[in-house]
Image 1 (spheres, protein in one colour):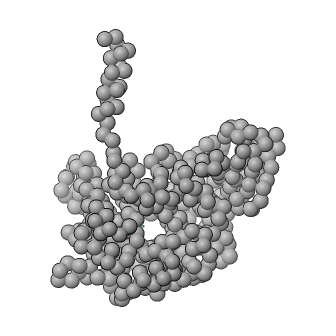
Image 2 (cartoon, rainbow, N blue to C red):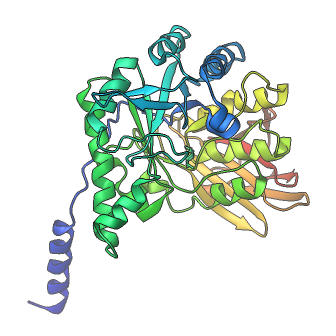
Amino acid sequence: MSQGRLLVAALILTSLCVPVVAQRSDPTLAATPPMGWNSWNHFAGKVDDADVRAAADYMVSSGMKAAGYVYVNIDDTWEGQRDAQGFIHSNSKFPDMKALADYVHSRGLKLGIYSSPGPKTCAGYPGSYGHVQQDAQTYAKWGIDYLKYDLCSFIPIMKKEAPHDPQKQLAIMQDAYRQMHDALAATGRPIVFSLCQYGWMDVWKWGASVGGNLWRTTGDINDTYARMADIGFNQLGLAQYAGPGHWNDPDMLEVGNGGMSFDEYKTHMSLWAILAAPLLAGNDLSKMSTQTIDILTNRDVIAVDQDPLGKEGSRAFAVGMTEIWTKPLSDGALAAGLFNRDTAPHPVTLELHAIGYPANAKLRDLWAHQDVSASHGRYTVTVPPHGVAMLKVSR
Ligand code: GLA
């Protein structure tokens, strides 16, 4: 055999030997990125039953539900003690979890909860270690629709079981996630499964194979432009791993929590939409300014996030401190975010031919809610500091 043929044969053999990672996650769950609210960013350890009911009420009355938000997710600190049979109970902040689920469902919404594969959650409450099947059954019995499963105290267990062997530790972690996925599936109740292990060991490459509908790609966000931008703009390279039923999760939204300007929060929302990220509001829904509601319920921007094609966007161009990110949409259009990461305003130009569109393509500004026009196939806009212009480009 010639050297060339040998190489081709070797390539074919290699490609045959690469294990095909089957997707375990249910693609009918989270066909588009989950939308809702999560208690952690604003309420953290103080969250209680009344806060969650209020979040459900305001999700409806603010127009968020009509705009597509559906999950009301309780994060850490709801957990109480286990009974003699090992079943978990909620603590005194949550007197009756089934009644709370019934209430959330009566508002046409869904309820999410939180646990860890380790013996303790990140905030030190009981985790699911040794009680995986029981906890899945309890969640289903209560009427839970979404579980965030946070690695936390499972880390020392992995390390103890396989000291100095990262590959074995990975296998142990994957097994822990797979076990909870399978236990949830065995209940027969559709429960969105959210992996939270901060993006370790390239979780985007295997999250769907252990049943994840979404997986955190980073450590925790906070309510600053610096952290939000660091997380959001660093998602580059992960787009190929997302799709219907299995999404990259750059963490929950901080919109409305007070630490960023109006322009910075618009950047946050626009970038998350282009990334096809879960849109989980993390603010106090009972105290929202008109600006916060306008950002969270911008249907044009939400439509980019929720586009049924399910393609995550990527950076197309970067010039100095400005970046253009694009996301293909199911109707053949393209969403384009023109971002300015600098602290001074900058003009940003979108060249239509450079993104494969004719000079007479139709442009709509998704924050101004109006059509705009290109001149000789170029559209230039001055983008404010840390701000964005977001466009939909159609033929
Ligand atoms: C971790 C997670 C956060 C939150 C807290 C709760 O830090 O990454 O999103 O769930 O735990 O303790």
